Length: 449
Image (cartoon, rainbow, N blue to C red; front, side):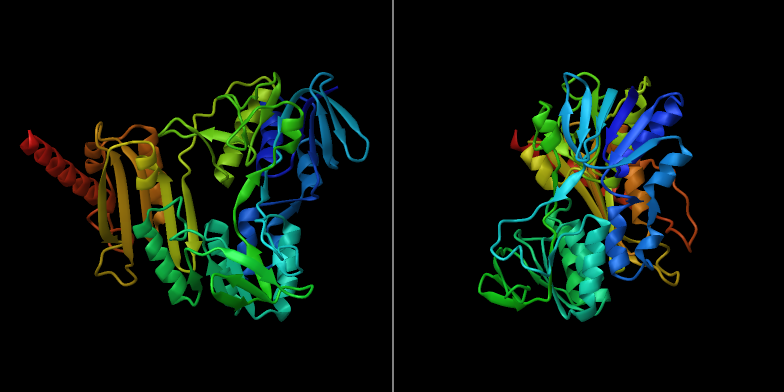
């Protein structure tokens, strides 16, 4: 009898297997995966762009990783889950019984229903094989069109520019990164893309991908754009087909789990891009298809599936990107999110520098803090600069998780030295800016009455 079977060898699945063995070394853990290599999909654009020298730098043999921790590794594809018999069946005909099961089937790149999307030269980017195909195609390519202005679309547009291609990025919304950022911060990113040579077409949808066998053009609005490569960067959809067939409940396309990462069926857990998470700000279920979320899901599910006890508190969707020399970070909710959830807000926004302004190499830094106007708690933040963004986002995420208020951030005990950070901390300055605005709001309201 297999104590624990895990379906999926990505970040969530492999983390779950390793954590299960750390929690209960005597547990018999079996990992089923259809890939022989373990790697981070997040690294693929940087291999394609040439910043990482080769796919071998980011990948390891998953069977060797499992052997080192005495985890059974089965290279196969699961075709069904029998919840009554507690049995997993694979494509090669294996039947694996389980006491507990973790579903970590990840996400599938969304392929929009565009005529010509099946032409040769049209790619998604999620698996290491996708990267191999794109890198091979780059040898004879001059023009690339990226469809979608989310994180993966921007990273791939940057990668193509670094490889010397002429790049056009088509985004259906008015701005790139329309969900994670507010428009004023999206505009900063757009200006950087244009500066580096990316042609940006916003508020436009692709009508057709044209070509005879191989892609030749992309038609968007009244434009016909030459293309040797088309990258579909329209995001991921949760891979929940197996779960749905087994009667596992889904919400917002993702598998619904409780705070223990357990599904509606006893002894079946789920983790990673196929799973819904609860927002720590709004309390609503949402998809959080980030590597950090997948890892955390896997840790909690792996621990609990073999007798441990851990809880998943929710997500803030903290993320950071690097597009050319620009670092972009965000956490919590945006102004748009706050409006959709009817949260009255006050925003503190300032410009600063990454180190003392007089020190060589100082770069401009922009920060926005979003507070709940009723209780003054921090609920969101966005930071853009050429350096030092990730640390600030981590600090601000910690502040949100611990219900920090405007005055708490104004009292932040920070460090200072000219080569590293300015004497005036931008988080403190942004909090002060928010407090001034809040006092004006309160004064205006008092005058009305």
